[in-house]
Amino acid sequence: MFPFPPPGKRKIHYLFTDGKEMAEEYDLKTDELIVRKWRNKSTLGAQGQWQVEVGEPLAGPATSLDSEVIKENCSNPVFLRRDTKTSFQWRIRNLPYPKDVFSASVEASDRCIIIKTSNKKYYKKFSIADLDRSQLPLDSSALSFTHANNTLIVSVSSYTTMKSK
Image 1 (cartoon, rainbow, N blue to C red):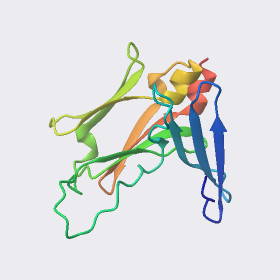
Image 2 (image 1 turned 180 degrees about the vertical axis):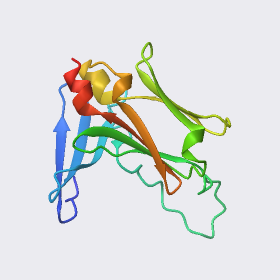
Image 3 (image 1 turned 60 degrees about the vertical axis):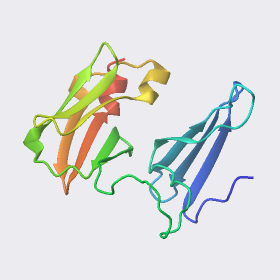
Image 4 (image 1 turned 120 degrees about the vertical axis):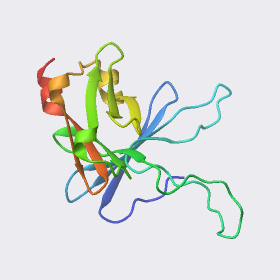
């Protein structure tokens, strides 16, 4: 039912009493979380689709190159989460603007982070599900970002967040 993980990785699968499922995959060398995904049951009890919380998004259905399919442009920004041992981290690829164009802020009332550009080419508003589940505060002093190789990296220090509670 559950495929074996590739060598060098450990997969852990959780089943909760409310019908939710969570699967996590860790790198055995670094003990780093590679993938975390959630699945809920539908109202009729069928298995839902996996929703990726951390890691690369799941690949869509395989299509042949000959078929005429409408698909997303490969140069569109790609938003994904990659955590480290000390911080929650998001990477947004395909953003060719310089670092001074970006701004990142915390909106305390909505418990979310807002990333936007001064040239109005990119805007993203997202929350940290881990903090919401644990009901931990989101502190603006823990937020930082950097830009390199057309990738914006936004970090929220988990140490500062945990310490503020």
